[in-house]
Length: 85
Image 1 (cartoon, rainbow, N blue to C red):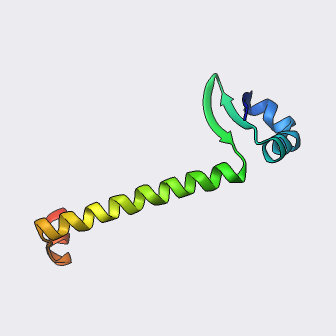
Image 2 (image 1 turned 180 degrees about the vertical axis):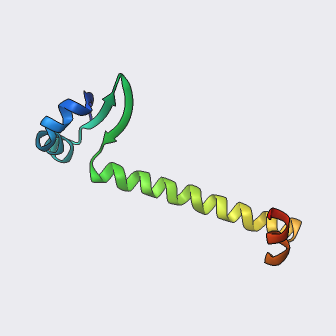
Image 3 (image 1 turned 180 degrees about the horizontal axis):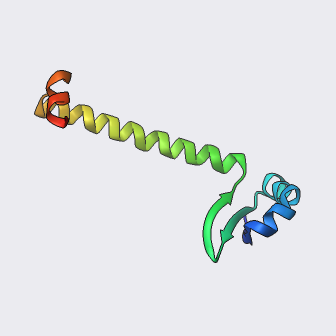
């Protein structure tokens, strides 16, 4: 897999070609604006992998939160509303 960088202005002119490179060649393309990286074009396989990783991280956070709630206890919603205003 290769990674390329292109400006957003150039990407606008070459969008169809960029999509082809990403989908067929699995190329990753970084979009930049004013010398700053602002976005990336990736194939659906990479996107699915990112979603899986994010879901696993979210699940880990949820399990940790439940574990904390069991050990530290919880408070009623009305009490929380009063505390946070």
